[in-house]
Length: 475
Image 1 (cartoon, rainbow, N blue to C red):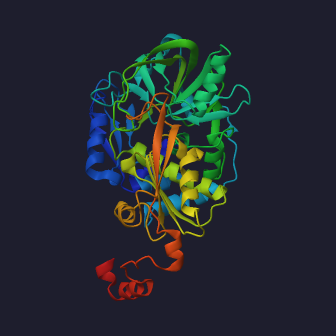
Image 2 (image 1 turned 180 degrees about the vertical axis):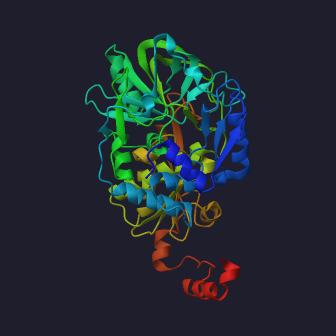
Image 3 (image 1 turned 90 degrees about the vertical axis):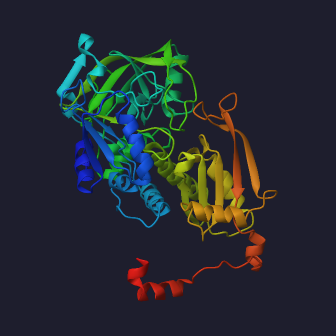
């Protein structure tokens, strides 16, 4: 059982997907090196643990690229490590999420996160090797692969969300939260009452919490409960020294503080997960740091964010695809065969759903539910539906279906004024975007009558026969 980030790192090392790098500088070396390796290796890039950072004591480490491969995602979720296709992994993920019995966290008196507690003049978030991630960034960011804990002021539940945190000085950090996210809704409620909002920013944690904090989850239920269900035992939490919030007992680094209404500082620019610098410095609320807790020899977790492929788009793609699949099932739509959100589409902007058509209008129903459910609504651009002979994760087959089963006059729908954000380089005023829905299925009436041309393929029977006879050649 993986209990914390250090257990996870040991397991990742054993499967050969961890690289230790010594001597890389925090200033535009860690991030660009991770970027270059992701460019070269794509979905096979290892995780990088940087140690002996110049200017910092040995043992103060920075981790990049935790969840850049399907195998590491599967390890984190307690699933088998090997799959025939990415869509098969999404199927396994959403099946597991669909049958969870939620497990609330359990409070403990103390934990490793409290090995070091800094308050007052002892606070300095730059005691950690916080990177400047990209060459055009103007600041260092301590929160990228983090979870920010906020509390709903009305109902009292705790949300864990992934929101970036710029460093202004040793006692001041940012907390950029997009409209519509649960942490932003909490913040808006406090600010509407003229009240500050307490936050706990966890900057090194079990990757499962980061995965869940980055995923679209239902309102009113803490990610701790899902994490406990996935692990089969409760997550141990301790009370934050300043906030009193439940923070992971085994967290590496926790920053606690207040966000005050009407107090802002320029935030950004930052190299976004979309692969662009989409905005100049913008006034945004910030955190006045009141307490920092950390383990001995702490590990700061970071997410590489750049043009695809990177960890962020894979994580968004898997979580989004699984969430859309669950939403389609919840809407009563039968026989969904696969969902994938392509990395080149930034994990949210090019979604493909594979179906077995059952009735007229089925494909359009799938398109509109997939594009409008909570998991598919934010920042989408393309939604494509294909027949069940198409692997939704195989872009060549998807393009084949779009090129041979699609009519540009009758098989397109457009959604206008959908939910977007300033991270979209084509965002419309008001943070809207328009999106396109593509029906790339065989027309249902022609499928029913059997008048669509047959596909040139190898039958299942012949595949099996040849597979047995030429096993060495085909394996």
